[in-house]
Image 1 (cartoon, rainbow, N blue to C red):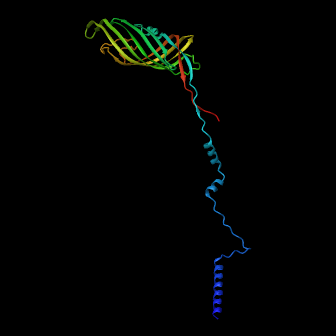
Image 2 (image 1 turned 180 degrees about the vertical axis):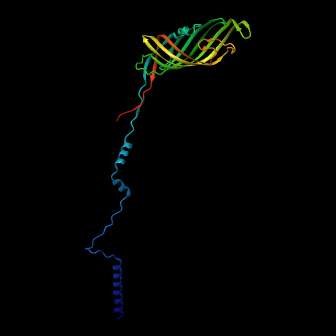
Image 3 (image 1 turned 45 degrees about the vertical axis):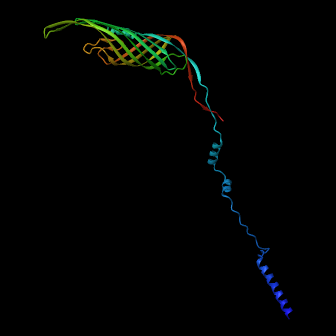
Length: 287
């Protein structure tokens, strides 16, 4: 009987172990069921790459990818222009004898090319003034000089062209001496008759000139030119009570500014050549 009891317990334990193992195993899906697969999430980066680019973006990308062409600097253009000394006389001074017969003026002008557009200019002259009437007698003479620069505004078609359209500035200096050998003052009201003289006096003057004009080659190396000037007095040592009638190179002795015109005939001496170097604009190479 004890043996039968032990045998029963052993069978019961074996059955319990079998059920326990069966409960731990996951039951397999039936053969007829459809297996549902979950679609793996795609990377957002891959999705953006797969999206076709827009037209504007592709153009910008090509521009960025295209290499920038190098800028090539062209060599400077070097050539030579004629340089020399132009010497002339102002013939308008002789015309003054018709309007002011008491004065005689002689004026020489010269200019020399410094570079492509700039010219150095100088002028020298002489004045003699002689006047006599029933009231007084006046004598005066002196010399003057001006020095300055002219800038040529003319765009030349030929590098050998020497015509000019210019504007410039000058500094002028004059030294003059004058006297009144005798004068006579008659007053009918007072019934007086006064005579006398004013001794010889020397004076100096300084002024500036603003000028503009043209010079044209009428014949080979022969030039005609005219110009206008505004002269502004800087200082004068003349006595205000008795100024000179004429300041050489300036004009009236009792004015602080003077307008003047000139007309010159000159000859050009080709003495040298000037080297001109002009830089060219950089340009990009074509693809």
